[in-house]
Length: 306
Image 1 (cartoon, rainbow, N blue to C red):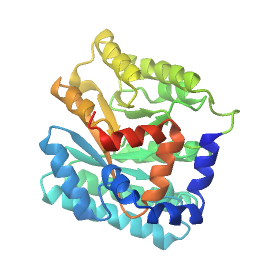
Image 2: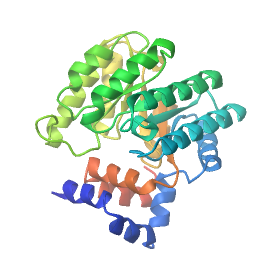
Image 3: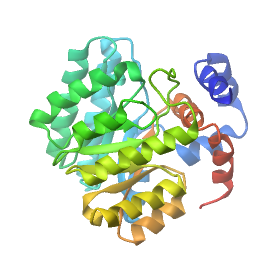
């Protein structure tokens, strides 16, 4: 029920205005979003890389409705990649891209062309691109575009969501040599016919998918803040004899920074997902809806560095 309320709020302009003007909002946004512009993204990236962390940057925004908006998103990523390269921050920093922000709902070819331009710029900058996964209605389209992009840009990363019933099978399809796959739990409201609803079922699916990726030939990217799943990831790395260069952990900017530092100090690659841009409201609401317990988690995170 709480998740339904949060997702409904994420689509309400009235609630957005109330949240945007609330006294606590600035502190929340500053903690979990790097800022609004490229300079903010670069500042956060420099700080994280200096601390021994890798980075993936997300220019916030999705579901664009015009080709002009899609082009503007593409151009922002091209500018960001050029700035990262000029600042010497690649290859430690890559970018994460939502295809719906590149025109996927308007024209798949438009989204593909824009994504290809970003992949070409990433290649020139000496880094990579990961395609974020969105709601289940776009999964097939996103994976189709991924396949096309990987023909010329094999380092393009995929994202799979453990709460979808299909994901274990998708993991098997993508666990091949050179394939970068980020495994997360999932952050959209989905029907029971396609997605597990209970937290325990999502967690079990995550572990099954984790096992498939860790036993395969690809490069797993374990996106989770859950202490149990992190411990399982460490255990499976030992079980499948994966060294620190053969998988990585990923966590969100502002969430469990001390745990990120601990894992990095133990020799693991830890990549921080850094969002920036002025469309922060939808991003934060999805994080809350992903696990309603995050409402308290965000509150604790504001008062803690653990």
